[in-house]
Length: 202
Image 1: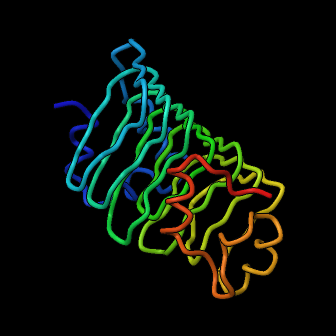
Image 2: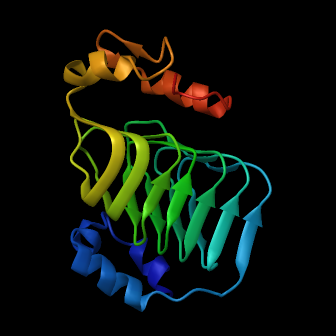
């Protein structure tokens, strides 16, 4: 059984990824097939779908969409040319043994990257049921709504962390109209916008 398959047996990856030292130790144990894999369109994981890709590099030409109770583990780098979307209120897992990149990211579940996370526009995580584990996250805007993400370094022009009601006024000046209401964002509406290929920034 591969290491990634063993990780699927874990209820949470926090014990393995909570610190930089733990992530480095896990990365040292990972092996890849050495071959890259290109997915020509969207990659969608339905509810209950577990997917393990042992490629050294996976390129998704469209969006990556995870439904609740789905899990995707990639041994190497994951490059999503579209958006990464998990809009829900249950567990989902995205794990990369290397670098992770996308145009936008909206995520509620557990997100683990053993390499840097680079998002072109908005990296938006929400609710404290789960966390994000990575050495670094870079995006134009980083939003962590009611969520503590275990990131060693964040590089962003704007970084919002806390209850949505405390950040909505400043954030609404940066995003296109109708993404936010007075009480904060509608994650379902944000997800729909990203699925249509529409941007979030003014």
